[in-house]
Image (cartoon, rainbow, N blue to C red; front, top):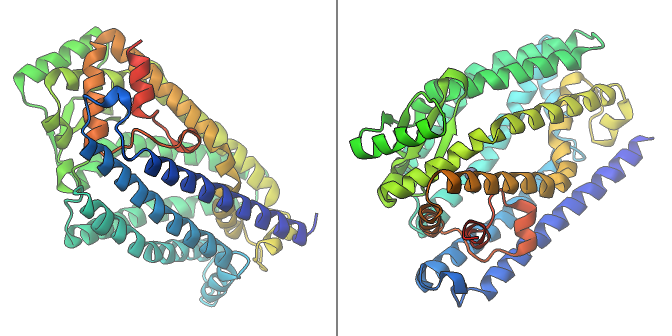
Length: 413
Ligand SMILES: [Zn+2]
């Protein structure tokens, strides 16, 4: 293989992934627009035409903007790689004559900062134009930038030492460096998952223990019935930023928590909250979290083994616009280029995720009343303006959750 082969393959995959994503989004927009005039039959008495059309308009607006983002990020990727952007950044930092590890850290931070700044207009538009227009945004510009500063500081405090350690392992030149990197990365991810609910999440939101006697006893009954112990049920002030509602499980081991957005708590009846919680418990009881961690571990092991082989092939760097090979460039190229290829695996991951959603729904139906979950889902899909009529192909490619009609049909069997 030569550098030119790499270059042509990269261009081929880049165009293929762009065309595929563009085509799927166009299909989705068209499909939703076609079904905009009529609430699907099964929902006629549950959802108003007005909500249905709002969901259609909201989804179409986000899809259209997504096309712009996709085009921008594709062009940017070409500039970083074939356009010589990465090499240029590396050259600028090499001038300072830092040690190889710190040069690597500086290049990666530089890349992160530049990408982050370029993303600001897109993220501002999404929050303050699209979300705002459909009445979901609750953030002020000030809050938005305070969040961003906090995130950057946390990233630097946690990320720089870890990144330095990873680059040090790679620099060590042991033939098994990739196994050490994998082990460290995995340990680090687990530590973050464990720390997140108690240490990081509270920096952004307030978590107050659930304190409604009737609901509390309902929930502890359910937890007991399902044999689940947690470190408490918390309410998060999600309404501070957005009126979208959600519920989730976080952490593991002795740091497990159940979190409800205050927005969700306000719109659902107690029986419905119980059913939603039972669904979340289902994810836990059916080992979905363990399966997800195992998949992540295997994928990253495979990825690093591949990287370990690629790192010594100088024609690959050259084919991707980097003239001066280094292990940190290998890491950066790997991170930037794999998504162009791994996007084709998306339907598989979506399928696995939707399978888990069905299993969690089934668990909820066994442990609570399925009808409560159905009414809760209808409310949630309606309040979050999730469309009831996505394009089936688009949905099977991207959706981690089955569309409401499919989910409810399963529950009503
Ligand atoms: Zn779920």
